[in-house]
Length: 127
Image (cartoon, rainbow, N blue to C red; front, top):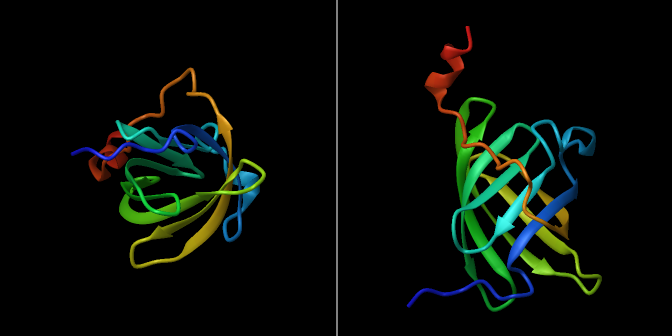
């Protein structure tokens, strides 16, 4: 049985702030976004592009992610709950590194798709 994401969480979310990373650079690669559809979910913020695997929990949605910060491969996890104000309150962790809380507001799917995370080999193709 496939668990579906609850409707109140399902969709695209615009990340508007983080507690540990500079909010000034959230949109370096385009609008900072998180999708929670249960399909081909994505995450983009700062220099991070990632695939997201999400699943419902009793109190919200948890997820794991895998991608690249610039060209460095990394992965991690996170979770979100819905605040009384309708915004997502979440935590994003980088495996073997730091993490941050974040806030996101309901949005629409970006007109330009979030690109695939680059591979380490792509780093050397730039020159």
